[in-house]
Image (cartoon, rainbow, N blue to C red; front, side):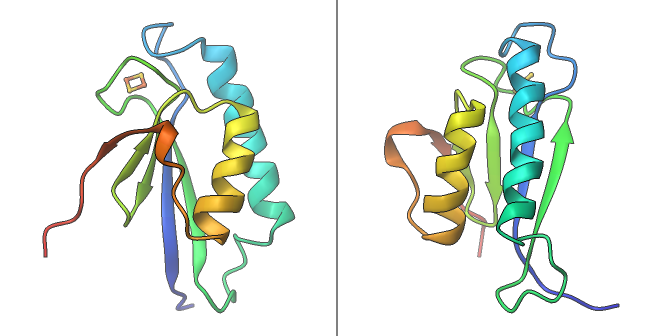
Length: 112
Ligand code: FES
């Protein structure tokens, strides 16, 4: 089956051992992210705007101010991503297409 992708979200939330964030916050954020993507039907492979992919990763090599959420293809890295913040990020960044400047730690645009 062929489908298009609008964004891929990478959240560090597995085994940071507290270096990046409290692991319980990372896991709670991951749980909330899965829920809100489903609530907005963003994982629907037939979605006209493309599906939103998500991956829970071990480490994104920042290791402070976590949990870290990296959003591709935008190259935007959010820090301190709690369950409450991930709700806002999905609504405003993914759906509203407006990144939340005050929570951005880093920008890494893709090379053209
Ligand atoms: S554990 Fe989060 S960036 Fe390294």
